[in-house]
Image 1 (cartoon, rainbow, N blue to C red):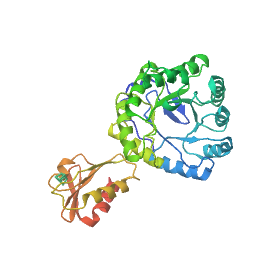
Image 2: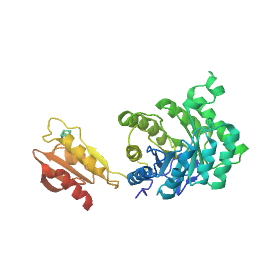
Image 3: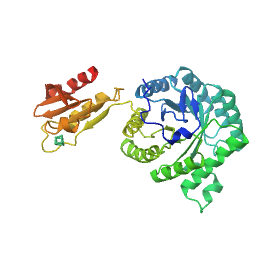
Length: 361
Ligand code: SF4
């Protein structure tokens, strides 16, 4: 189930307005919603639905799909109709695609008013979203700032990004009387991201924010950059929905989101692996064992703590708060739960014994 509760009392993001993306609440004190984006070909309904299935299994709550061409709208509509998750339509350059997507089942539209064809085209997209009863994410990007703003050398990049987003929000709210919005202003640089979202949170305290470091890179670097940027923001109560953008399988993005939310104790859904770095006392292949346990845990959706420790001397004591764990010796391991020994097993059975005990919890 994806129904993990927010463990911590709501942080200041409770001050934002609530927007509904399908059945998923965003903002207004709702738990930070986890999103990802499909990367199957936009006209392949089966491939996109299979990816949505895998993402839902991993705990994704909102999924975004690009509609690059008008002839992909039929596929988009079919995906929306069969998807268990709300599907956000991601559109650039062509307002008519956005308008059509709103009519064909999008749970939200993601546009950048800077490249959708001007404010008049944006006004038409807003009308379509209003008619469909769906929100719009105003997504500003460092790469597509309007020329006048980009040329100003009295402003830093975060100030330009925030100013651009604020300007669009004023247009949506004041000129179009449309408040069903979420805002993002992403950059690929961590410090720019943090500074921009801090400015946005203070300039637009009521608007739910979609946070992310864009184009963060492949898994290793991308997760570190995203954890730095989003970790700081979430800890400050900034961010109502998040994506960790990776050059990788979107399922990895979702796992990374949950691991980050769990690390901050904001939401827990997946197991936390506690494993020691090993030292000269270790007499088993602990790195291999820990990787195997990690792999087995990837399909578990229980917010438990699982410890894999390299020796009996320090193992159970150092991981006393683990729900289940193993402390390894020469050729064997002692399985423990909350610091108490449950059973002793041979090295070859360590992983299966651990998984069995986890099942029994
Ligand atoms: Fe070394 Fe044992 Fe600590 Fe692992 S648990 S780092 S093997 S002392």
